[in-house]
Image 1 (cartoon, rainbow, N blue to C red):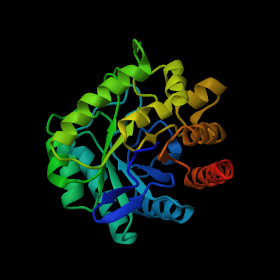
Image 2: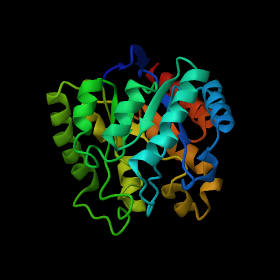
Image 3: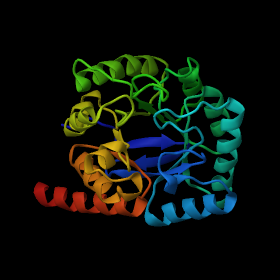
Image 4: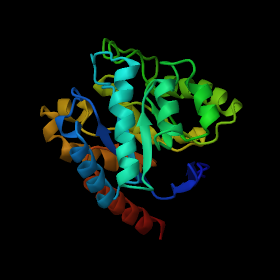
Length: 284
């Protein structure tokens, strides 16, 4: 039996998770691993966000700090400069849009939600990058995406090792879910962190066992879009990885994923529709 919640509350808007949802990615960075997701001016931001919404995105995820392996550090001030203005633009031009701020810094998250219109926090460090993050989420009471990462973006791909990658991540989640729920934080979304401190083999093991994370009774997000699990396996480039991404997104949906975080919204929405039709056919 599935005990995962049917809704999450995004600043008073209820997002129904009885059907999987799509989170579109907008990176306001000059060095994101996928060039097609980089946006640097108001016109391109509005155009990209508008297209994502018209294609069926339920959430727009805005990030200003590249988390690709070996990414350079930037200051809090630079991250704010990139992210906060972008969130303001989307809130102004596309009112009612659910916006997630992709940051591990509590100061950025606080301003993004309180002053600029974000309604969710997507933390790639799972609270490890800023000891104040959980308390900020407690104060804001917005949905929090708890992602697992072994190490930091600077060193995460230098020989990541696990005893049992799924069991280890579940244990890691369990400790942090307990702390978050003790603070009264209700809407927690789990992201196992594909590509963050994992080998290609680890990533495929996690994908094949994605349903195991449902034991926590919380929604699951999968971020597979154009990542190395696709392009290294197929010996192509991130720019060529859309088809492979759709294949892996489909597997994630079949294994219990509730939210797909993607660069290509239209294709993700189509995958959801097809999997929903298949599931409905099986259920009848």
